[in-house]
Length: 493
Ligand code: CLF
Ligand code: SF4
Image 1 (cartoon, helix red, strand yellow):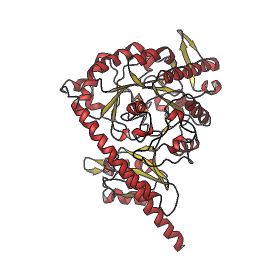
Image 2 (image 1 turned 135 degrees about the horizontal axis):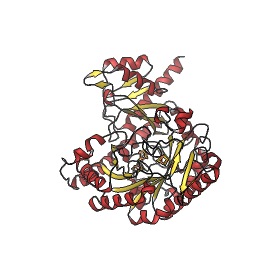
Image 3 (image 1 turned 180 degrees about the horizontal axis):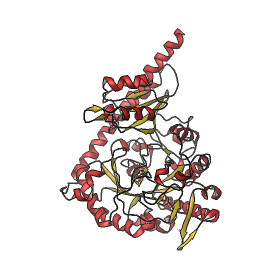
């Protein structure tokens, strides 16, 4: 998407709904990665579904938390990147095993998390198998949660094989958001990704099985969109198998009216025991993923802030608070008042307005930058869209790209906590430096002299001058300063 740089969010801008937008709409949508910036950008009904969903809105992901309840252990297909010991890799990272729950346990856990986490806005079912291969447990869980927490949105993720037959039940339960995994449109390619599927209790494999799966995925996608569900499509990027083909998939995703396309990197490790892991199939590098995302132009809007979270994840995307809410701990949590969520949502509305005003000013400043080039900046943040985390506490960096015409989130890189009980961990720092490959600037709220020097020796400048500023404002100011410096250096040369 190199030619689709997205301007900073603009307050009060009115736009066409996504389905009616021109081919370049993503580049003009006032959002960093396929997610809407303001109420005026979308029809009100869509905005209401998007504004608090951390996966469907990049802005919302700074403020709102999701929770997964792992009530779906079985699966009806076999993906070559999946080992059933672990979570569904269509929505999650392989290599982790979630705490499996009954619907009753899921209800208790959801109520406990909601009592402690005013940021909670959505509860999703994303495995550990396929939500719709376990339709009875999935729907009972949704019914129970809806009765206890009516202000929290319901979301599910599926491989799509059984989606078509369940759209009416999904709609009837007010499950508002559905993710379908679609890795290929070409059965020959899909046959390299799926070992088998089960239809009518019969296991099928090969190109014919792949063709049937794709037909069902597309039929389910169409039916879900027609029913008014907000649909996201996930695709796993597998170098040498479907990476080039994903451009076609992206165009098809748009054609079918899905709201977002999330291209996720294959995670392939022999230790996970997957077919791909054991056969040496590699995943893409961050640069390869970004190149594909940049190349997908004029297609569906892209999600770039996915964290491939676990099927029992709790918290803001990128943070992991599930251990606070294990079954043995939730008994001690007293019931919470929904008022705390209401108050938090009112705070977010006010914060959004401030943030957009600041972003408008930053956007205007960017347009006067000395040079136009791409600048990648790694940001330490613990939410609220601000540079507000100590370098030593970061477990990930959000990666922003600045150009003269905008700042956009382009991904994230995992880091290791440098501060360990008051001491610096040199091994962790070495891993963090490796994770920042290709990125020369880090924005953080604070950093000690030692790690700052180590980063500098690796060619990475850590800057804490913009502590607690909004991220876009800070990145824009840094871009202006860096381009002015570059221009001055070129004139001297
Ligand atoms: Fe969960 Fe998925 Fe719903 Fe989000 S996750 S079911 S849409 S509430 Fe989000 Fe996690 Fe990425 Fe999924 S970051 S893996 S996209
Ligand atoms: Fe595994 Fe999910 Fe694929 Fe099923 S759909 S095989 S659980 S990755």
